[in-house]
Length: 388
Image 1 (spheres, rainbow, N blue to C red):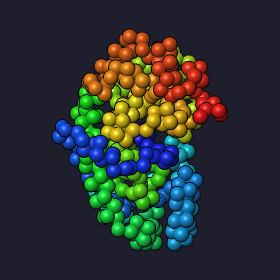
Image 2 (image 1 turned 90 degrees about the vertical axis):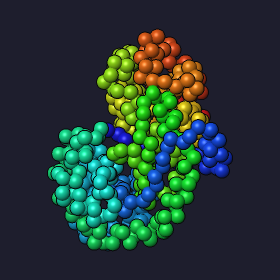
Image 3 (image 1 turned 135 degrees about the vertical axis):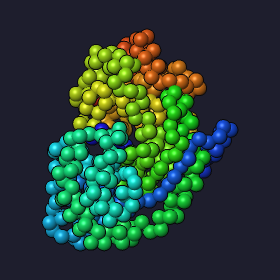
């Protein structure tokens, strides 16, 4: 399944201050973005599979909660959560909770644990039709899910019978207060206007944010313009996640512009070294995947800065994914040179022109990335131990 999970483990996020809303509210143009914020018991149950599986990625946040709830589950269910999570990774399905969330993200299937169970039981009617029409459709992934569905029914039934709904309520408290607070804070951030300006595309006006108790370290994009995130993420991070994830793919990846850019980048020894040698847990294991992600990151950095929630680009790309996003920094630097945030336009046309003019060649791209990243041009990646 395509990676649509925004890892937010570097939660040294920009603290939200009252000035941020002031920056966004100062815009004189009408706000095109309509934010909808809610919570979800079903998505939280899917997210809690990670902690229950004992994966360190999750237990550092929810270890105590997982231990407490696991003691309520039958031994067979506990053991199968661990086994199924491992099989999802080894079989190529990917992270179990996030990818199940994509499947179950339509028609209210996420409302409760019971609705999750019902959707899995009637998966050919309640899940498959929308999934097949979505950008996430993958026949191999569906086959894996279909085979594992009976085991998932047993697991979620066990979680329901062990009182997951009440257990979650004990930890969330009155989520309606947090939902209302986030809703108010987001209302002045016009992500859609900036996305349309900087890509030349049109987007639906509504962005839905689902607040979850057990979703760290992920921000998860599911079907439609819906994002799942932890309840305590600050609003700056919420805006950045939405600004990023909705842009995928930033251009048609099989279109002429992307294919021409890939041909140039294939001759870039550094870019190919990054593709081959970076830690595969970050994803992006093909050059196409890197271009998809890094052009998106370049655009979302511009959008975040325009909205007053941007991180320092050198810090951002040093801390993310072992510093592998050199291409993002180069593309961002080129867009800054072109004052793209002022002019906007078709990002696909911009990419085609940049490729045609030789701006993606190492002799141009690397020095631009060097200035953005504040690293020597001959030490862009891998990061040196002494890098500050």
